[in-house]
Length: 349
Image (cartoon, rainbow, N blue to C red):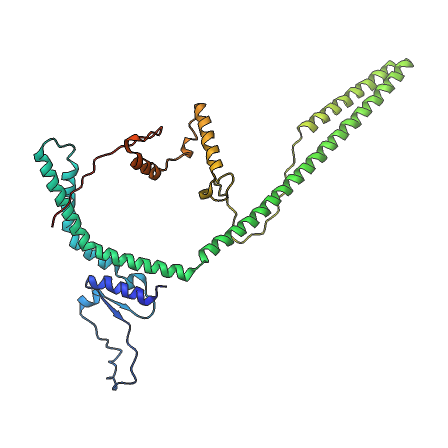
């Protein structure tokens, strides 16, 4: 596992290449050697020259602020200084080469070949000067990220696992609350419809009773009473019809939501994604699922629906390997084998 000593060494290597001085913390006093001279007065500290102050970074046994441990700004500033003149050369050479579209004479061939050689030489020069710093930075980055990974261990996986478990539990509670509200609304709706039905049934019974009494009054010659009873019977019929209609179109009343206990600021957010129909990981998609998807997209294309074509992607690495193997004999609908010219030049020492 990379330790602080390894990182310190890498930081020294990079800074030393740039002329930046990295000092250790003050040495421990020795008890075996001769007596050391007395410490200078703390009220009058000895200051190094201004130039040394600007380039010196102390590296004690404790982890410093990153910018103090690795003087990135100072290093980059110096690198920019030594490559500033090369930028213009890079632009000039690249523009000259890119402007060339097609050559038709041997003289143009010679000129472009020489320009390419100049580009290659310039590229090699820049890389030779900057690659050592990039290599040290890469080693330092690798050491630091390795140390971070070793220090964390399975902590990131554990954080994700704990979050998943919490999200499942919170979603279960949310779904249970939603189911409770649906049940409450269904119960209230059923009770309301039952009440309206009972009201309609009672009005219908009252209408029937009034109709019987009206017929009895008519039989004894009391027409006025019969008409009055029939008018009341019509009102009851209207009431029954209205109650039945209300029962048909009745809606569930609102149900008060119950608070769901959860940590402050926490929520179980939706994170929809697509997975194979018969696998839990997209990299494990079985052939049957791939075939079913291809057939589905083909059927939609046959129906002039190309909205699903993006679900099928070409494995260009495999296609390139097939073209390299079969060359001009490759026959795959939708693909073709091409052989663009590639310029190679062997430099003799």
